[in-house]
Amino acid sequence: MPFMRSAHLVLLAVLVAVVGFGCQQAKTVEGKWRVTGAQLPAGASNGTVVAELQGGTAKMTVQADLPGGAGSIALNFSGTYTYENETLTTQFGDVELDTSKVDGAQRPVIEALAPQIKSQVAEAAKKAQTSKVTWQTPDSFTVTVDGNTNTFTRYKGE
Image 1: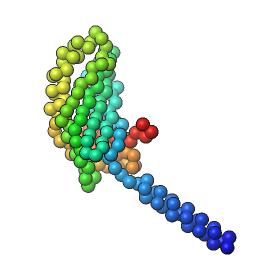
Image 2 (image 1 turned 30 degrees about the vertical axis):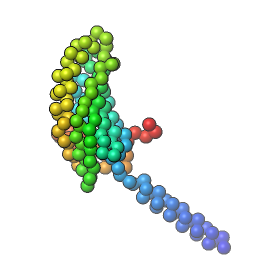
Image 3 (image 1 turned 90 degrees about the vertical axis):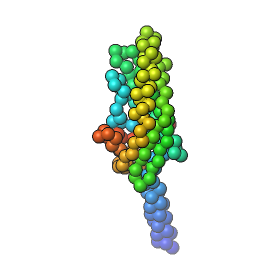
Image 4 (image 1 turned 30 degrees about the horizontal axis):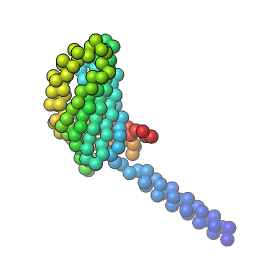
């Protein structure tokens, strides 16, 4: 009897491990992602890019420091995405420019350029981008856009 009980426990442990491993391997682009390798606006540095993909809706925020310690700007994109057969297609239709973190003295200059910046960025963003997804782990994948490789790493606990 002790042998049978041990055998059942071992079988149960193996079953739990197999089921857990199978669930862990699910790969979905839905969620919130930190994106590295993305191109920043001209002249900007120290940027962060966050993408959120949920139910066909895509949001992306690009925050970057301006030259000369003038603060930072954020570009907030919204649009749509599809993911099928390891191919991700995004198309953004709207972009907002946030200048609230620009140094007070520089803010009027940046805000005067805002329509031009927004127009240029929006025009580029409206083009659908289709990329092959290469999974590194269930929480990390890469895509290549215009010869530039971007790595998406899932946010955890946020």
